[in-house]
Amino acid sequence: MLKYIMKRLLAGVLTIFVLITISFFMMHAMPGGPFSPDEQKNVPPEVLERIAASYGLDRPVGEQYLNYWKNLLRGDLGISYKKQDTSVNSIIDIHFPVSARVGAVAVVVALLIGIPMGVLAALYRGKAMDMAAMVFCTIGISVPVFIISLLLLYLFAGVLQWLPSFGLTSWRHYILPVACLAFNPIAYITRQTRSSMLEALEQDYVRTARAKGVMELWVVGKHALKNALTPVITYLGPLVAGLLTGSFVVERLFSVPGVGRYFVQSVSDRDYTMIMGIVIFFGIFVVVCNLISDILLAIVDPRVKLNS
Amino acid sequence: MFVNYPDMDEYASLPAEMFEVCADSSDAEEIARPSTTYWHDVWQRFRRDPLALAGLMVILAMALMAVFIPMFSPYTYSGMNLTAINQGPSLAHPCGTDQMGRDIFIRIMYGARISLTIGVVAAAINFLIGVIYGGLSGYIGGRTDMIMMRIVDILSSLPSLLYIVLIMLLFGSNVLSVVLALCFTSWIGTARVVRSEVMHLKHSEYVLASRLAGGRTWHLLVSHLIPNAMGPIIVSTAFLIPSAIFSEAFLSFLGIGIQAPMASWGSLANDAIPMMLSEPYQIFFPVLAICITMFSFNFIGDGLRDALDPRLKK
Image (tube, rainbow over all chains, first blue to last red; front, side):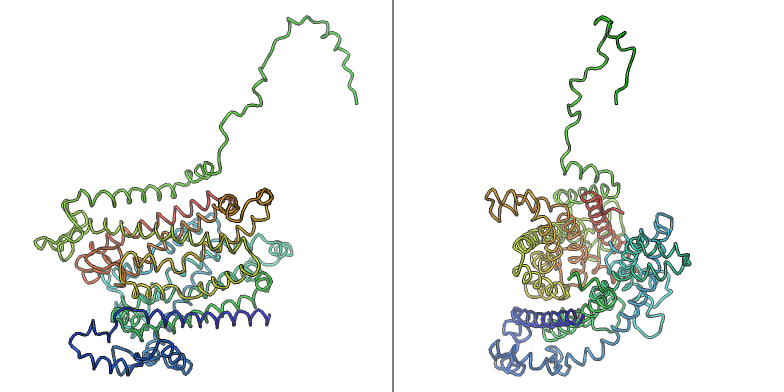
């Protein structure tokens, strides 16, 4: 067990190293940039050189790379190219809690709806309930998040005017962004729960439990569901990465002041330090979430570490 | 144990003319119908799936429309007509016009060219990389396989969307860089499938026989292992097409994909957001196009999965 966890941890650290290195060299290879003489024709070249020097851009690449690491190990992600008085850390400090709150509510909602729906679909296999759940899953898996967001925004905030379309000041403001973020995950979780539940219900231990006269609710709830939930745990890691994708769209459409919206904004501003800082922050976040779900899975299901 | 038939002698005395041939058994061993090939079977199963067949028809129709309609249409994707801005759907403009008087229908058709091209090209490249990488890794095995798979593990735990955005910034916003960005990590799924199939198949008798007959690694891979692993490989590639189309639409929707005046479905939807309440048709048609395409490709993928591996069907 400990060996497995150590192996996963080592892989995680290696992944983060690769992530930071790739990001650094990709950002370094970007053509143009805010301080290149080609793009800033009205600023005298000496001024541009001085600005570049203040960001350490006049040093050789290797040294810049080492400096970036040094700062990073102190937890410093650098200062925005666009707004000289704003550091990447301050943006993350202020805006990440907002994203995290909306994201966490979406994860909880997705689990609370997806798991029961999957279980019901499996129990009533082939019945109307199952059909309805499967149609919903097909829609949820095929329709991209930005389209769901557009449709919900148009319907509930535009035409019906039931819910506010922007901001995040009351609980009613959470409904639309959370619904948009949770839509695709609900479909995945339902489908996953249904198929693993169907498999679990055919196992010998379920038949044994029934033969012993265990109550049906208990058979389903304890014996079958417990074993059917392991694939859902595996999905939690990618789920966080998926919410990230969703957050870029949802935070922009609903004007939620989260990191996702800042990321899209800094991409169109070509604010390189900001982009890189957020990429590294998000990247580490996703890698850590994957790691946690892997370790969690190994604790819940001992077969995992035997197979790998 | 012998059974005694006392009446047999009676029959033996009958003359030969009294017997007649009741059936000609000379062709009993002949095969009445041509034997079906694997791919013929697959097609037979695929054909019986109405959703998958409908999906295939829709995609074929869309591809034909995307190729031919722009050739014969009086409008172009960038042609503006300031006397006809924000017009609702009509005979002249089946999907209406946008705020610059451009025909939305023709812009959706150009968008279909981009989406379908990106989907197919990205899937083809990922298929190629995945087959080569997974095939080599599975075939060689041992330490090489271990290292190759660790590299894949690391790449797959990177959040690929962030890197797609970085690659778009690095190479500029055009179709080629979208395809390039999508090839960064999408091949990993295919590579894993190929690897596990090859590992499973490489100990089969026909592979051993071929190796015994002097077959080289490359020959074994290309003419025995990969063709026999084709079913699962095709399924995993089929689902790459909709995910590539999704990624392109997503990037364009955020404003970092295809650039104006060229139109992609994502950028059409994005452009129409400010007009959403007053001119909802401007957002409706591009969204409809994306949904239809995504559904069709997913149905085709599901149909292929069921047709190629009927055991998986539940």
